[in-house]
Image 1 (cartoon, helix red, strand yellow):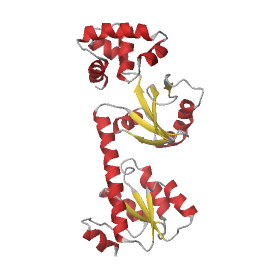
Image 2: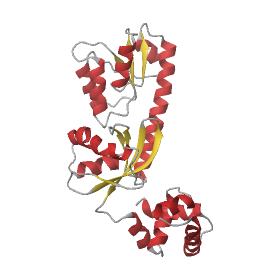
Image 3: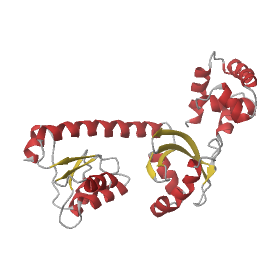
Length: 280
């Protein structure tokens, strides 16, 4: 019945009869979306979903659970395993197709955004409030990998260290040096993107610093480069003054010099020039 419904909706269907078969198919032919039965012989749907989400090449695929279990415990278990939605049996075809379209669209937008950030040279990671890694841009993952940090370290040690950044007393303008790996890495807090999710930047300390990159490419003093860096990060004059320990009036004077040297008229144009060098 599901095959016929999805076929009529223009969907190509691949069927797995149990969990291990599902993992094998997904590893060889990456699906756009997965409908997962909660109860299957051998490995159940919850564990299959957890293993799919543990694979960074498959973790972006939305999983919708199909279940006859409508009790709260089973629903919560599906979401905790990484599912984005659930639908109870008997499955209504029109409702299923409508939900699939929504989750497909959201997944594609999210993946496109991450790839766009990656192509712009952004080493970004996202973490939950307990420090667990939610996603990374491909470049950030390769940086972690090249530093000798394996999956076990990312699951156990990294959350313990990231929780320091989320502590109320922590100065979020200050970078956190990761203790491990073959090269020095620093994590910087960017923002809270939604409740319980935080965006962080990963910095390779063996590369030239952002201040050094700006000074190498632009005719700026060190202080002017610092001001430009924070302007490029979207900070106001008052915020930059607080960060650098000076007054907003002094920051404004530095900006006047910046505009003159860069031949621009406003902070937006100056930020665009800075980002060109910061994203190499």
